[in-house]
Length: 258
Image 1: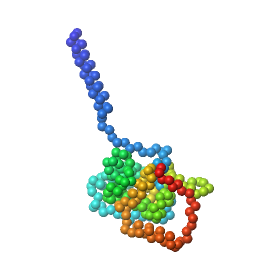
Image 2: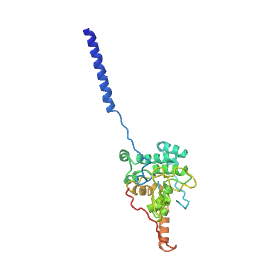
Image 3: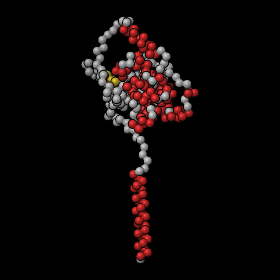
């Protein structure tokens, strides 16, 4: 009888010890970084990207990348983006672009979950051009940062007018002409057709103002010889009275500190 009790006690103790180990491990297992995306109720004031913000002029991208400069590692890094764009799934491509920007901006951005505008300058030309080339290639030159840059320069770097051009803002049905930001993601255009505005994608987070978007569009990766000179020339012509100036009576929201 004593022997039976001893075995029972030993079995019970081992079982309790095993359960204790399992409980301990469950609290200290590996964790992973999770980045939450805004819900469908979020407005564009919390996310312009998205990457994203009617254009009457045809804008094409003339920025090209020497494929020999893209390493095997770089090509692999952008495989998911390439797949989404090949499948014309622009919504997923936009989400992947956002994730990639955080990744290529460095460890601090990864831990934080978003990119500071001051970190954009540290992103390599090759990485940003690789992303842009994929967007322009799979959109017939209608999407991409280089396309957005051309529009931005065309409107003299005025972000309100840029947002209207790429239709990140929508015209309100009011007596006075007014615009407001589109609600993300439902009010953005995720299909490529004749009615899709140039430069509509990818979207860019403007939660903390337009500095991030400005730094992206000003990055050396998208500079084309003479494009800034052309902008200055058009501005000088406008000041010189070459064309009749009309007063703009449209009402814009000018506070970008969402």
